[in-house]
Amino acid sequence: MQAMQYFTAAILAAFVGYVAAWYVGAIEGNFALLLLLASVVTGAYWLAERLVFLPRRRRAAEALEVAAAQRRAELDRLGIQKVDGDVQEAKSRLLMQPWWLDWTAGLFPVIVIVFLLRSFLFEPFKIPSGSMIPTLLVGDLILVNKFTYGVRLPVINKKITAGTPVQRGDVMVFRYPPQPSMDYIKRVVGIPGDEIAYLNKRLTVNGQPVPTTELPDYFDRDAMRYFKQFEEQLGDRRHRIITNTDVPAFVQGASQFRFRDQCRYSVEGVSCTVPEGHYFMMGDNRDNSLDSRYWGFVPDENIVGRAFFVWMNFGNLKRIGSFN
Image (tube, rainbow, N blue to C red; front, side, top):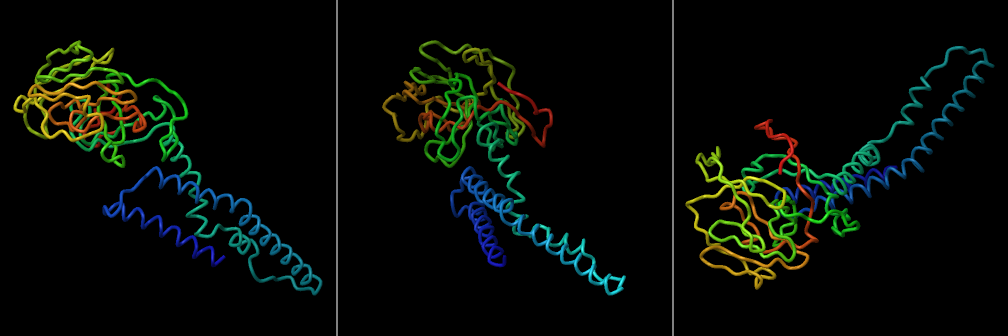
């Protein structure tokens, strides 16, 4: 048992060390991998507890009870009525789960439920930047549907069910192509085969201007200024966007991404043909969004899920609810 204590302490220390190194930026962490490993390790302890350790403790408790009964019988035969010691208390101590099983087998049900929910159903995210204003604000805590576009295996992100095709206008979380360990959130404006143009701050899909209605100016409380606000309609989805009249239309600093030859840049903006199996993404805060105009297309294998609900914003509870 002492060896198991040291072994378990080493495993827990390794997990803590990984999280600490991730937190300080020494390594690029992978939360899905961490949850998978935690589920496997705690699951192994949970099985060992059910099959080995708990039966062993029960046998020891039963042996103690038998020995105590025999001792009482012998003392009764000798005419001794008073017996020292509390057998039930000693039995409870024998049946008690040791600390190293509390921190492994005891946590397995919680960890595996979180792992399954996060991997196959819903995953929470926090909005870190203003690229999706006015649809999503900094500090919004959102839920992402992990099965709409097809169920994917955790860690390797391999799709195992077809799901619903990605639609123009969807708000999607994906792994950032230049750095897949990071998750980004943007709006889908182009699906495979589309000809997307964003020229002079007007979006065109397959040669057809996206229906746009001007709205009252949007006041950004963080920037303490007003921005031009419009309502766009992509397919049957209506959503709001904002633009900054002080920012020019041309795209400055686009990288050398894959399929860049499918894009044409000019002083008016950019137009691209979306390759098969890829998507063109843009933020609703059009002049403050690092998106496909700068780093290219999102491949299907990078999809995480469809964002659909704000479940909390601690600075503004009115934010709670669904969004387009």
